[in-house]
Image 1 (cartoon, rainbow over the protein chains, first blue to last red):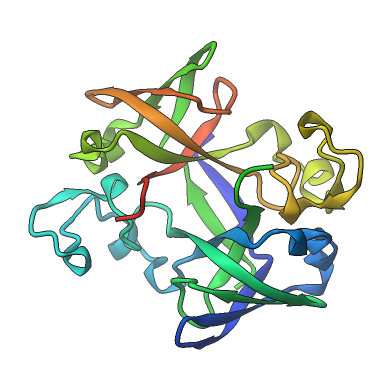
Image 2: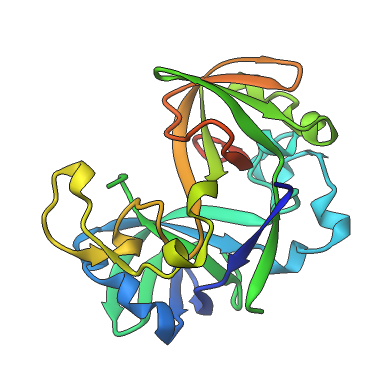
Length: 123
Length: 123
């Protein structure tokens, strides 16, 4: 197996300071059932602006945003330029209304596709 | 955007009790540079045995393995049957030799493709 298909389940529709809105597509909405019992969830999203050969072939970076000056491998970094443009953030779940989640602390731009949601900690 | 392409960067080659071996493909191996400064890393892998329509269309589950009896949405669970068969485990990094990682605590079967490695905590 060389590749797999990711199906986007929704997207980030609004970012205002540290509060983000995520809309889950209606066909996946039932998967949110009882997620509201968690205060924190993991959000896997797609770095859609880096989904191209230039960024997906980067193997070393200098994480300057984190004050680093030395080069390191992308797998030792959270760089959005990486073979698979998947971001992962643990966020505070503020509310779920229908198919709409409001979260605090998501490190994703508006229009980023959502790949998965998982409870934190693991269940 | 409806779908994205995941490129597998390696796979789980051996599982013995709680110790797993991961082989990263030579073309991605440079991305491991300096990962050995972390004691814990996050491993994103592909639930390859669930990568089919039957399992990717499951939206509610009962997490019996965790002693639950009530149904909940897949996004409120760690079920491998979910729209995107991506697993995520924080593991103890025991060693890196060349393109081979030895880790403790990876909850993945042999032959599971590896999607990404990230430091834990986030950098």
